[in-house]
Length: 340
Image (cartoon, rainbow, N blue to C red):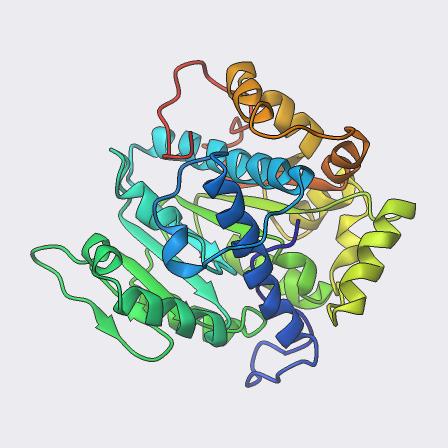
């Protein structure tokens, strides 16, 4: 269950980007995650008409991996759905370490619209994403509208309400500059998304980023999908596997428990936070939907899936009081973000 990419290592707020030896390995995790999502989509776990533009998956993954990614995608999007309903679209989405995530394109196929959608990742990743968008009219058509234009550079893309930009999340001056280019509105309700991103950022830099967001934005939600319970034997196996591929989990100290996950935000000026392991997230998905995907593939035995679910979590943090009730409980008649 490997993640879309973003930073790791040590760069100070006022420094230029110093490419860390682990960065290339972290960037490569985007390909792993995209391959896994593409494979699960092809099997019918959820609907995504756009992931195939970015990755041509051929290798079939284990059923446990597919169910894990289903729970990951569904959990994040349950939170997004509730945020969009609460704000009636008068909001913005900022996707940190976006990788080849397709949420913007899928949202365009639903009644949900947002004022601004901003995606940030390493320039190496955004360059590939820009190239793919540029050469596929179906993607460009979703970004462009009758009144707007799409501006492209090798690593950045700007549309009327969509902005994809290459940036090092450890360099706050650079992040601030990029957000200004994207015409960010610090007064508008904002949801931040991060899937296995903060864990690759050294604790001090991660803290600086979360404090900076808390100081800049008036009303915000942060949805963080990441490892948890990493201080047991199964966690050690996960750590060793990542380290063997050159990935140092610089922020793993925040992944020891659900409490350390929520404290990461509370210690950085966020009003509050709550967290659930993926066992709880999976059980919050409607029984009919779980039954549907459980019929797609048989599990040899459920122990590995249970262990995976116990070692990943979903965290929701908030600024102010408007979004403190946002959680993962499922409403019976939720409209879909096109993942059913």
